[in-house]
Image 1 (tube, rainbow, N blue to C red):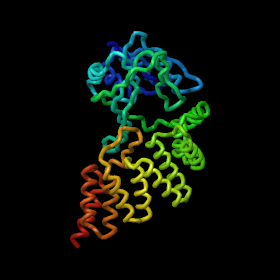
Image 2: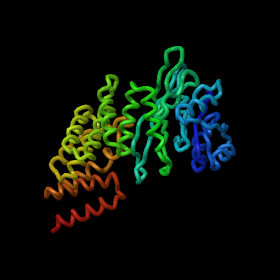
Image 3: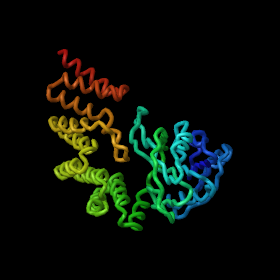
Image 4: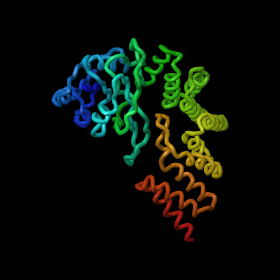
Length: 360
């Protein structure tokens, strides 16, 4: 079975050694460099990577991905698309070979998109950028995805237990290009609900609250926008936009709608709990953090956010109990928070103060 890793890069010299070592289980690694001004190209070539240099203008991620896919030999059985800031855990090839069957088209695997400052997993979901050599092309200028374009019906998509890919991005890299590319993507395909959602979220990241509200309202009205997880996320982002505009009751209404849309997700409960924490509505904080903690199975989608599954629920409950005079319960919740984040100095100090107050 011939397995080829392919990717795109620009000015990622510092990631080369780690990435190549991680991808070395493949039969070959091919890379499209889109204009590095550092030593990325020479470092890759010294490591045995087949590098092609080409400028993509105007820049689009889908065009660059497709050009890099074109570099993969025609006789490859499996293509593995990764970026240089990503790292496979060892043994990924054997797990892939064991799971891949004749006729398969894609493979899903576990992907850790972010880590906490303490090195714990943040956002985790299942990725599917491993695919058969023929029948696929990348689409969308940004947040690009694989699309089946083969003449026959697409083959099965398998889930490969045990393959783990970690993302360690460059914190200095700007995402400034995302907004214009998302605006272009929605202009090209106005009926693609996924990209409309992403555009609304990007406006939120940029603090463009009115654009965020307009775009996400449109997303929720789209008949094809049926995935409840993403709809709930749009509602949460609407709440954040209204909150930043000072329309607090409207914000609370959208948080409650998000909860109703996807009651199995922690994020909306925690967003509302945080808002009530800021308003010192302690009973509300306890209620909504309690609802969040009743959900014990973390979803396998990108919607799942680290804070909702970390120490924050117990942290907020501890403060709420303390403010209500229930200090023993506050201590208990702080200890639970510390069990999830033992190096957090603020939590350590909170525990010390709470225990001292009980002794008085």
